[in-house]
Image (cartoon, rainbow, N blue to C red):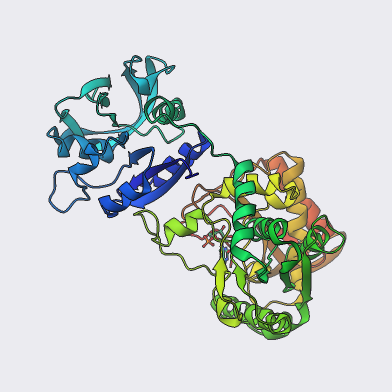
Length: 514
Ligand code: XMP
C-alpha cells in the first residue's frame, strides 16, 4: 500500500521543516519539495494534500518563486501559508500589495469557526504574523474566514475547490492553536487516515531493509551518537549477524563514553551485533602531539579516523552495504529536499565511503526528523541516556581543548565535563538547555588552594539555547548551580584552579569552544 503522504512545497520560508514536523506530529507522513519541482512529479506522488510554505519574496514581482496555476486544478486539497497564501490568491486573480506597516509578532485574530480549518479553535485566538505584503482582495470564489485589526484577509477558503489560505504561521509555537488548524486541514479537508506512527516506521523499515539487503553483508561505523546507534540497531533487528559495527575509540570521547557504548552494543549488551571496538587512543594522541591549530586538529582526527576504519574494513573484506546515519534535515539542507538549502558537509562521515569496498549506501533514517529518530531509538529499546545524548562533534574533545592536546588535558576536560553534566542533571535542567559542555582553555593563572599557591588551568563552561544550531544564545544557568559546578571542578579536578562561564552568543561566537 502506498504511504499516505502530504507534500510541503517550499518557497524558501524559514519554517519549512517546522511545517513538515507539525504534519508528522499529526500522524501524517510528510515530505518537503522545492517549488521548482515539476507538476508532473507532484501528480505522480499523488499526495493527499499540499501545503505551500512562506517565503521572503513578494509574489507579484517577476522573478519571485511561483508555480503554475494548474496546481489548483488537480482537485488535491491545498493550504497556502503566508507567502503561499498570497501566491495562491495572486495566481487565481486576487490582489496582493504591500501593506502600510509590517505586521509582525503575536496578534489577536478573529476566526469563523464554521470553517473546516477552524473547527474546535477558539473564535478569538493568538497567531504569529510576519508579513509586509497582504491580500488586499481575495481571489474570486474565496470567502474570508479570519481577520486581524490590520489584516482583512488573515484566512480565506474556496471550500468547493478545497483551497485554503492562512496569512499567519500556524506551524510556530507562538500560534498556540496552530497545530489544531494543521490537523483540521489534514483530517477535515484532506481526509487523511493518520497512519504515520514511529512504531509502524520501525516495523516497515525492518521489512524493507530485509528485502533490500537479502543475504548481503553490511558494515556500519558506530559513533555512539543517536543517529548511528539507531541505524545500527534497526539494521541488526533486520539482518542480525550480517551486520558488523565498528566503533573507533579515538580517546577524545567524554568520560566513560567508550565503555558505555561497548556496554550497550558489545557482546554483553542486549543486541546481537558483531561489534568491534578499536582502541586507537594512543595512535590519535601521537598524531596530535604538538598540534595547536584547531583546523589542523580536526583534519588530523578525521584522517586518522578514516585510516583506522580502513584497516578494519580491510580485515572484514568486501561488503555489500555501508550504513550511514543521514537524517531528513541533512537531506533537506544539502539541497535535495526543500528550497532553503544550507549546504552542509557531513563532517563525520566524509571520506568513509572511499575507504570501504562496498556496493551501495544504506540510509535507514533518511526520512526522519531528529525527534523521530529519538522515538525510534526508544521504540527499539535503546537506553534514554543514549537516545537523549547531546550533540557531540565527531572530533570530540579534540576541539574542546585549546592548544596542544595531551592525555592529561583530555582527563581534565573529561572530569570537569562529567561534573558539569551531573550537576545540570541534578538541577533538573538537562532537557531544557540546548547544548552544554566544559572546555579546557590554554590559560594558566595563579590561585591559592589551602595555603599553597597554584599555577593551573582554567575551565570554560558553555551552555546555549538554540533552535537550529546556526544561531544560539547563552543559557541563563542559575547562579547557585554555576557556583556548585565551579567549586566541585576546582576541588575535584587536578590542575584546574579557575572556572569561567562563556556568555557569548552565536554569532559572534560558535557553539563549540575551539
Ligand atoms: P558550531 O561550533 O559550528 O557548532 O557553532 C554547531 C553544532 O555543530 C556541532 N559540531 C559538530 N558536529 N561534527 C559534528 O557532528 C563536527 O565536526 C562538529 N563541529 C561542531 C556542535 O557541537 C554544535 O552542536
